[in-house]
Length: 67
Image (cartoon, rainbow, N blue to C red):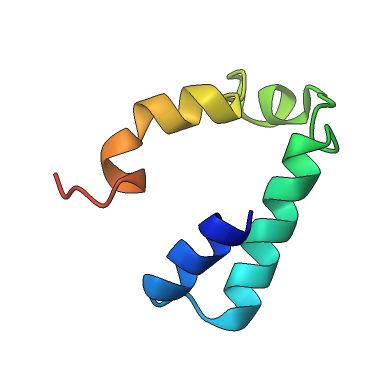
């Protein structure tokens, strides 16, 4: 996580953003976000994406590649 935080800092992410993002990543690694509900589906009529599905669908944006 230290290497990831350093990368975020080098990319210009402000300290509060680095703390938030790395904290969320630690929670994700520890399973804190592994639960699921159907709230999105009930509200929108569509199943929500998993983190992996979102990352694959938006890899260009996440990797800083403009469309």
